[in-house]
Image (cartoon, rainbow, N blue to C red):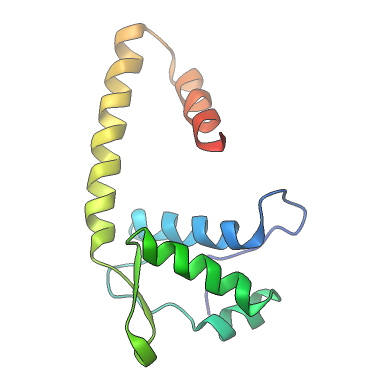
Length: 120
């Protein structure tokens, strides 16, 4: 059903955040196209063996971020706003790449800095 979502039970990251991040990343990189219908909260909770409220929280946060939109009983879909978010993220990445080049850091160090910033 949702093969791109895998929960790591050993992770310190809460399951709802793992779900939220995986859906957001898949939407941002085009793995989930605009209009893609996500599994229902109950179906995904059952598939991942997590509480329904865990998936509901992830979907709620994704909706607040504009990544998905809920259309009542029709379901939850990847929102077109995801394209705007992807464009904004790409613009920010280009600015970051320019800074990294200007200050002379290598790519590995730039990635580590970004990873640290994302985790803080």
